Image (cartoon, rainbow over all chains, first blue to last red; front, side, top):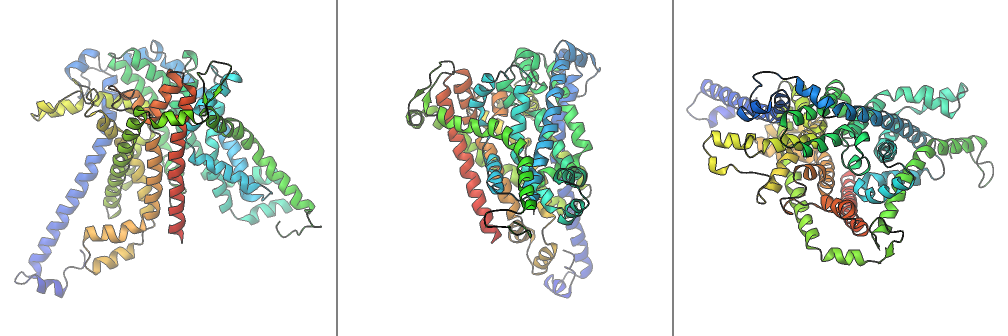
Length: 299
Length: 304
């Protein structure tokens, strides 16, 4: 587009002079960028408007919803949140979600960074086999193991306790996290570890004092991804965490909705309670999210 | 194994030995938990799929390939697989197309790319249950946005209970899935576009290629790596889709939106046909493994 006002272009345009064609070009470019922003803004609204409806409906009364389902609330009703938190027991479910998410994230990071480091930096007999075994886990969906896992958890008396979610989630987090950490550790310069070793560090302190601190960006990307996974997990708690006292938020929301189908304000308040923490984490750490998800996709 | 040569045949130097031992020590904690809670149940799944078991009996009766023979004649399974097929086709093409469109529009020079990226990705971080509740609301026969808008522009006759109508329920669910997913495709494609050689695009412009030709012949081939990756990822997701369907329609009305994952869940956990459910889960496993295999082969070929 930039180079169109050349001599050849002028001759092709025949009678019309350079000035006219420049005007035409500018007009075309103007329409082009108008169209560009129209599309971009359309999809922006498509993303945001439904979220606006959640927040708006969560602040209305049932009557207001019936009268004006899509607009702003005429009178803001914060009581919906208080009621959802206490009567709807979302406070309890929130606590449950925190109780399971923290150990899941901690142990996934710890175990995966150890194993990723071992596989990346300490070549040992059988390390390839171990790595392939973990990689296979990337291709097998949770549905492939969910049925026997239920009976295993039952046999070891984990069902009905927080462990039924914590421990399987750690195992399920291993393949991707190990893959991710191994790739990162492989990219760090070998000399750093060697130097520390000469200074008298053993393998563990090389990992703990030198390499892990250097892997900060990878670790934080993994933290946000694993937190999102644990916070949003649905099928796993649906099967193993049905007991009311231990339900995480997402599951609590599902059961609340099927019990109070007509109570839209409270359901929406519940949805907002599930949604807001993860949205805040996302907005604060969005660069980490994107890094984590695009890792491996782009070389 | 490294510079430290073996002292004797089959015997490692003390340093290499220590390294190998340390290597195992680093890997073992992850390996144990993974073996017990992932590898073990995987093999049990195969075993269960060869038995007739209701989940309570002390005895699992071995039936060989009986469940698989039953699968072949199970019309509900074939119907569910048909829905998965529709799901993977529409649910893969559309979000990738939207992601490409938005990606190229921004890449070729729009202001505010971080802001757009932030917003487009927002639905991706939401829980499936939240997404389902939002879209149940949007499809609500009376208050829902879709019907409100249709009535507002005078198309009252098109308004309907979108999720209650077997004709529209599956497509309505797909719209939901696309909404929640195109931001992911967009972000990955944007990352891929960072590596596209802009001088090639400029060269094509000088050679007289129009916008569409530049897109198809210059940009898309350079994105092929990224595009195969998301396609594989989305296909696997589509074969295993569960949450949105389960919360929004439970596979209904009737079986109009039953997919293989919801059908498996019903058999194994609601109708106590554990053996048969395990066989169904093996179908999902095979579909995922086959997709991954094709993806890996494609990747290998691209790398050459």
